[in-house]
Image 1 (cartoon, protein in one colour):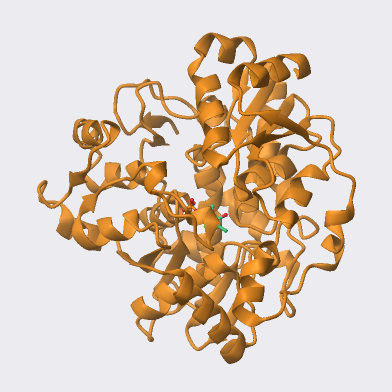
Image 2 (cartoon, rainbow, N blue to C red):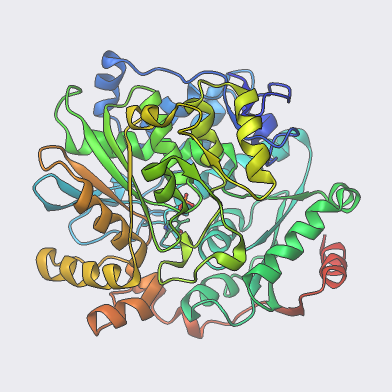
Length: 477
Ligand SMILES: *Cc1c(COP(=O)(O)O)cnc(C)c1O
């Protein structure tokens, strides 16, 4: 299996060759040259598998034996998807399921993706990435220094995935005193020697700008082996494909049934994995893209116009991990939509990269979008507060703000005869203030994380100064 770029002007590479990088050299995103197919017999064989066997079965069709031998992949998968890692289950759920479901009512379920160490779905892929990085770096005799900026979820998931891993250091920039106390405590309480938290005096965009400036200094980047683990990383998307299969099997009896998934979306990474699962043969009816007030994706699926917005036009909402106005994985879907015509992708993104927009209707392709099962909707602060209250009153379940956006749009878009799985992308404990606002009481917090705010913290406060941060990196690598 080789990986090709959506822009068509980079050489095809293996899974482990693209593992540590980001964008392809031509500016595109990597995708498999063709999607492996799972037929009816395959699906039947997979139906009874546990999460680890399912993950191994799917990933071994995406990774060549000569690239990562299957006995090694087996070890990596087995040490990643463990009940003691994805342990923060709800009452009545079995941690062995890794991504258990929770029935809300007939044909309506939560698919719990947030039972991992940082209580958000990013742990599903990031934990695998940590083990893959360690393996591939050791094999190549290399090391990497991951540099990132976070407003909360991605940074903590990366740190918990990479802590203690040989050959990897993490330098994570966050806006000083702008994260929730819980999020800051999660990251800053890590005492691992390979984790460096830098609280930048400024807002998230200042931290992000520093990462961009360092990454654009190619000489510095090469000399200091600077890497990234951003949402366009192919291995993250590949890991996410697995839970669509797991969720499908959990709520169906036979492969003739279809199910729909509602996905709280920002960078389009999560729902892109759903699209790929569908392309591999999983019987998916609808993929429901749910956005918050930052509704660039909803606009596209309703009108055919993709018009990313700048960070100055991005709203700060109560589902902050979806506050994204440029969906970095969206190009992967559009590549399939245009029949994998890389020249067409280059043409569409020429206007996007110049700060403009494109209209898929003009290309005569809008009708095709529905053939891929996509529908969409958006949600607002008021909606999510109401939905959180309704879910508690009706189902006795407390959900977080992001999942609330998903449930809100799922209820609008569902066909009541088709099972609908709403992807639970964070646990409510992570966004305590919003839950208190909605319900008047704090959400339950996993017992092991009680009092996390009181643990000793290890972080460096620094000015938003590129040179100072570069000097800090050099001094600590
Ligand atoms: C990252 C994140 C999302 C958005 O996922 P994408 O893959 O960027 O679309 C939604 N909810 C939560 C809680 C997240 O952390």
